[in-house]
Length: 172
Image 1 (cartoon, rainbow, N blue to C red):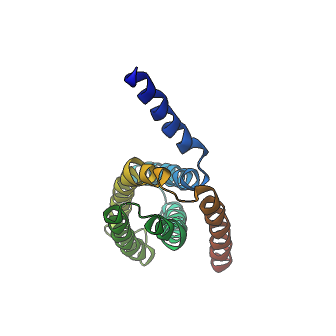
Image 2 (cartoon, helix red, strand yellow):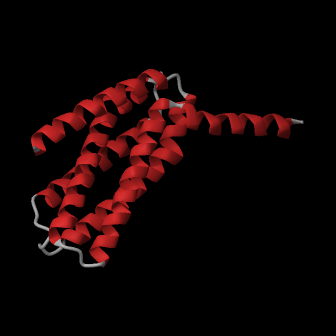
């Protein structure tokens, strides 16, 4: 009987991942960026035009910058306030800092420069590692905490929309 009680609880926790607006938004970002990295790999493998690779690299860098910003401004502080695993949050912030440094290097380069494609590849691998930790360790702990994931989800969506508009304005 104890086994039966455990299984529905596990299903409920898994189901909450699908309905939680905060982690749902962040996971959708993860999926979108992963697809862009896969597309970039195809372009690089096909020796696509520099302008085509650069446009996609810029899109990737912008998406990651927006995502990191909303996590750092809203999600991570709320997780800290709810006393979610401080070590995981510290690691996530260090990973963000390293990713931002790599993004800055990529943005300062030309797609014809040596190591441009390699830096995009490493950034993608780095982000995959970060995503695995967030989705596998951090987000489940956040869902079990007293975080207001619905309210945070709304705030994340609003801030993401504002940052997207700001970035589009700067690019125009």
